[in-house]
Amino acid sequence: MSGPRFNELLSMVGRGLMVQTDSRLVKPGEVFVLMPSAADKSAAFLADALAHGAGWVVVGESQPVPGDMAAGLVRVDDPAESLGMLAEAHFRTREQAMQVIAVTGTNGKTTVAYLLEGLLSACGRTVGVLGTVAYRWPGANFEASLTTPGCWRLHELFAQMSQAGVDTVVMETSSHALHQKRVAGLEFDAAVLTNLTQDHLDYHGDFESYYQAKKLLFGTYPRLDKHKAANADDPYGMRLLSEFPDAVGFSLHGAQAPGNNPMLRGDLVESTPRGLTLRMEWEGKCWSLQSGLVGAHNASNLLAAQAVALGIGLGPADMQPLAPFTGVPGRLERVLNDRGLDIFVDYAHTPDALLNVQRALRDAGFTRLITVFGCGGNRDRTKRPLMAQAVAELADVAVLTSDNPRFEDPLEIINDVRPGLATAKEVVEDADRYAAICKAVALMRPGDALLVAGKGHEPYQLINGVKHPFSDVEAVSRAIREVLG
Image (cartoon, rainbow, N blue to C red; front, side, top):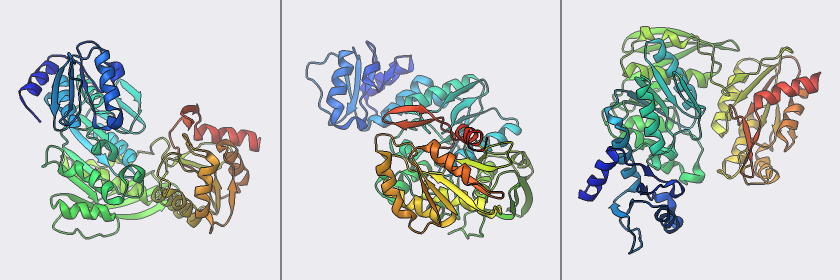
């Protein structure tokens, strides 16, 4: 990666020279890094950057470049990795005295990140969180554009957190970000895998590639001695434990580690509509925890947070601050109302997440379960009937509607979903999401639970490239007023 030319550029960037990956943002004299994702548009992006006055361009070894360009040329093996090195030099990331915890997995990332934030804050730390809902730390809160920001932006956020006195960063780390090396230039002190279920196969192609992307966090990125934790109740978590004998496993179901991995064991003593009671065992020590969170999946999330905490210096006696945590916006979020209706909004948008959240409500003892759901457009089509099967298995009434159709026709998405509802007890369809929620509210009887799944905290519906204001929580509250008077 390094060479005299690149080292010269690295030194200039360390002294303040700006770097861009978007050719439209290049200012005269700045560095333009042509990312591998540019693919067949690389020539056009490079020409645009040069037209904007780029002083330096960083490209892959085989990238064609104009023979007469005035900008300095730096060829590298991996532009994405080089960008991380440049960002680290510019923002002096490794000089920042912050402990960094990465949370990855298909489901549960946001809840585990929030749990860790609350726990570590209660223990006296100043915590910054980067994730699906927001990028925030004391005195700052930004709406999240991506679960894990782009590489340069990520380092910029780290610099801002360091300046604000943050000493611990908890970041959700997506498989896309790992595969695309958005986290290049960072060092992690701890990493945890919550689970791996079907999602993002439109990007990764198959489960093995998806797993290998997640595994990068544990075996490829710096600090191989980082504290590692993985869910032993998940087959891919168990596989990770077998490949990293120093990783800590956590289990609700008595799973046996594949080797001599240390294990945090949990016992779900009680699960009711009011919350959970958990009993933990770790290295001969036992303790209990009562939580207002609902469902076995949240019991697993609580174990994940504790498995991380135990590896970064906390002990069993430090875990009680987890007890008052009541949840993340859009994660089994109860919609308060004066009708006494039990209505929940959840971000579940994968087959496994739908199964988990519905089981949580089933286990709570409601008479019937009504589930409103849809599938996102321009995403993995193979999971659409599987999501429907998950709803058909556990819901008494399946209400099929639109989610974020993006650039697809909502009715075509529904056509893909419908076969999975063949065994459903009762099905209601309406492509208009608000109308579907109204119909679901109208169906409710005493003792029922209504789950509105898929969008969670999102305040919009994405249709033909336009974000239209739409909050499931607000839509439910409005439906209660308009349908029930």
